[in-house]
Image (cartoon, rainbow, N blue to C red; front, side, top):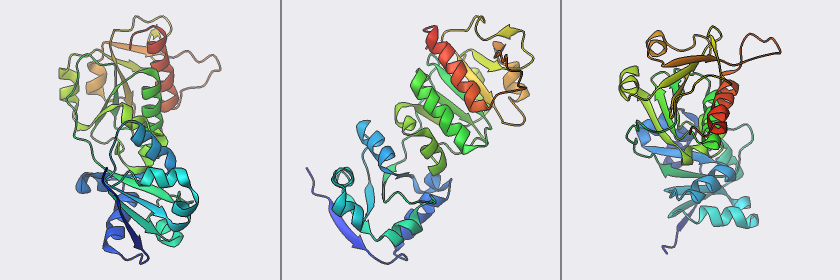
Length: 261
C-alpha cells in the first residue's frame, strides 16, 4: 500500500487551495477540472464503500488529530492536505464547514441502457430536488438517470449533498437532448394532473423511464408526445400538485412495489 503524502498548508492563497475553492463553490467547475468535490464524512464514506478512489483529501488540523475515523478516511488518498479551520472554511461551500473533504475523478459518462429502470430529468432547476430524486432512485432500484440539457449539474456540490451518496450507486448521464432518450425505445411514463389513468392501477411498462419536468413548466411537449403513458397521482387532500421530488419518490415506490424495476 502506498504511503500517502501529507502536506500542511497554512496560506489560504495557496494555488492548490485556489483550485479546490473553485471546485467546491462553482457548480459547473467539475466539468472543466474533470474532478468532483466531496465534502463531509458521509459523502466520503459513501464513496469509499463503493470503491471510489480519492485523488486527494483535505482535513483540518484539529480533525486529523482528534477524529480517528476521519483520519482513516483521508489516508486512503495518495495526497492529504492538512489545513487550518480558517483555510477549510475558505474552501467550503457550506455555512458550517465540515472539516473533511476529498476529491475524486469525474466518472466517464456510461453508455445509455435501453433495458434499465430509469428516470429522465427534463430541465429540473433546483439542486435540492435533483439530489433528492437521485436518492429516491437509488433507494427504489431506478438505476439510470438521464439528465437533459438545462438540468441542474448532477455532480455539483449542492446536488451531491442532497443526494447523500446516491450518486455512487447510479448510472448518471447528463447534457442530453431529447432525441437520444426517445431513440432508446424505453417506454416513457410521465405524471400529469390531466391524465385519466391513475398511478395505483395504471398498466406500467416493464421496465420504464419516469419523466420528470421543469418545476414550473413541466415536461417539454416533445418528450410528453413521446410518452407511452401519463398517469395521475391521487391526492385526496386536495392539493393542486406535488413537489417534483415527492412525486418522483411515489412513482419509484410504485414501480418497486410491483416488482417492475
